[in-house]
Amino acid sequence: MSVVRIDHLSKIYTPRRSLLQRVTGASAAPGFQALDDVSLTIEPGEFFGLLGPNGAGKTTLISVLAGLSSATRGQVSVCGYDVATDAARARRALGVVPQELVFDPFFTVRETLRIQSGYFGLRHNDDWIDEILASLGLDDKADVNMRALSGGMKRRVLVAQALVHRPPVIVLDEPTAGVDVDLRRALWEFIVRLNRQGHTILLTTHYLEEAEALCGRVAMLKAGRVVALDSTAALVAQVGGADLEEAFVRIMRGDPALAGNPPDAARAEDEPTEVQV
Image 1 (cartoon, rainbow, N blue to C red):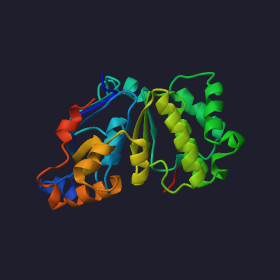
Image 2: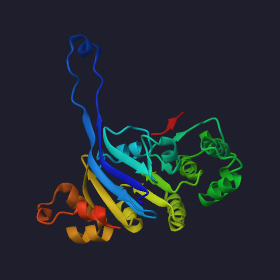
Image 3: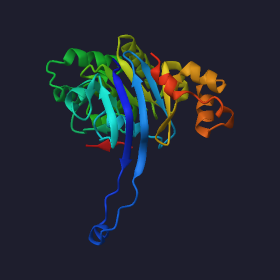
């Protein structure tokens, strides 16, 4: 069974009608289609990449997957749990590291992770919290207030929060954006270890060298649609580029040379700013 299944997912953001439009009976402006009939599956233990330019729909897809946004059409499930009709169990199977630095400024790092554990009904979780802190280089920051941490350290805490309930599926939404080399290395060493232990990883990133080195398969989104889906090696071979970055650029630009032999998403589908709250 696929751990993530997305079937014909579409998402349209519909603007609210203004007071004048409601009074006069005028229609609202057309909505914005962020996702258009997206279908893909992710298998247990995969390290899967979701790539695309800004505005392609990557974060919207993750928001639907995490239950933060509802689909206009289609169905999404995590570990067999529908994110719309069985939201609690679907959310428990998922750990999400968001792009934004979202944190509570009134708690220490350890308190933050204990509170996060409580959201999932976990008590006496300190042994796993200690292991996460050590693996992410946060053990000496455990009793430091979140406000006192640097941006890179706050991002490490976001990763720790996503892992605190031991989810089988981990979603990383541009986790290394704006972080230093040491953090990137420590983070990837830890995530690769989790993947080898059986966790499924879904990664979005603009660092295509990361995707090429880490991901077994990648899907490329453009204007809300999947335009390529295959293994990284197969995509590079189909496009004829030197590496994944060159393949990505050619696919996004709609290289005329690909018109007779486009990356076959349908065939590949069948293959085994900082915010305080």
